[in-house]
Image 1 (cartoon, rainbow over the protein chains, first blue to last red):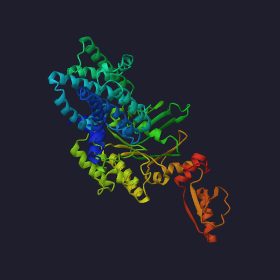
Image 2: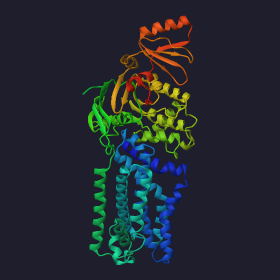
Image 3: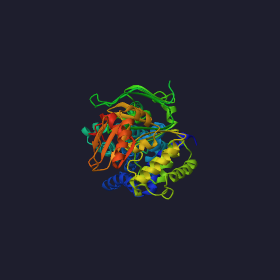
Image 4: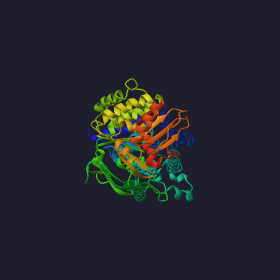
Length: 246
Length: 306
């Protein structure tokens, strides 16, 4: 393996495997969070929205992975001074963030595994639908990771960082119509829902599995918005994120 | 570009500091071998200087290089050669000692199997061979500090920054670490900051004294000693009457002991007269403590804790 591969592995080990191995209890939270909303929505809708709720669970898992990355990077940077140690080494910011980000996804694996099983039973998306769903989730992950990394480089303490993380997570993955169709949201509030990229991700996912039927224009708009947000955040994170302090 | 460690008008002003210079035009050059120790009071600029040299912080003005590699322009090349344990670095409580060192080596691009072997070797070097698989949270504060030192020891970096490496260690562990650092400095360049002046005195080939962002002293212990007014120190036990001193400074400490700082000729004369009177005393060359207080506060000990 190339040195950059080992550098990525360091992030994965530190940010997920070691904690999961040494403190297995930490996995319970990552499973409970997306599945609890799924359960509530399914019960309240008497099972009618289970498909949307499963897709919402996927989107929330991906988005929360990025938000957790923000908190964890900030924690490692400010409390352990890990980022300073890594800056003064042959490692690169890309390897550092990639390893840490993949670590967050690995944390979510137990929840994702349950969701995959549920998706197979209740959604059965087919190959094209599954690929479309995968693409949306990867874009969602890229969006939240770049946002998380940028915010982490600016936060100076863990309290501020976790507060940010919870706020953004609530604004983007809990309040918007991620676990149910946007048609359930009263019209004046629907405009606010469209301020969140997760709304577009949910629409694409619901369309991919036949839960809603979007016009080609609406679908194209959703992809363009989601892509533009992801690319913009990626460019901002590359430009603004600080590896070396100023 | 000069070889060794070279700083030229290095200045740092942090944003929001109302223009206060954390580093103020620091310039020096010294060989990049052995141990270079930075001493100074809290806020003197030690950590700022180390962070700039370790490529973690951008200077506001000036430039610095190590062996011709500029800390800004050649950071990528320099990072292949450096390793650093920052001042407030902590081990992650959910990791074991071995996992801490191993993951650091992976960050440096070392393969897993080699990293695993080196991690155990480095932990053994700092005396932690029996705590390799212990969770960091179960280790004492001093032992966790040793784990962090083991991370940089395990690397192949030949320029090592240690920001207050022995803080929190008990006196025996500290001396064990000194021995280790002395061995390490045979083929590597160590830059360390410390609050323990006896540590700098024991380890350093060169000592830099920072005060309010300025470099106010630099050299070997002998060179620093030669730069101050008095080079000899006589200590009289409590209750002993100090003799008349023609040239020097006489101070009485809180415990009643008297210190006389003076030059070589005067020290010889005072010693002779004390011996004739049968007075108990000790004679030594001035310590780094004395030099530090003299350089930083012109001999006044007020407000001078390094």
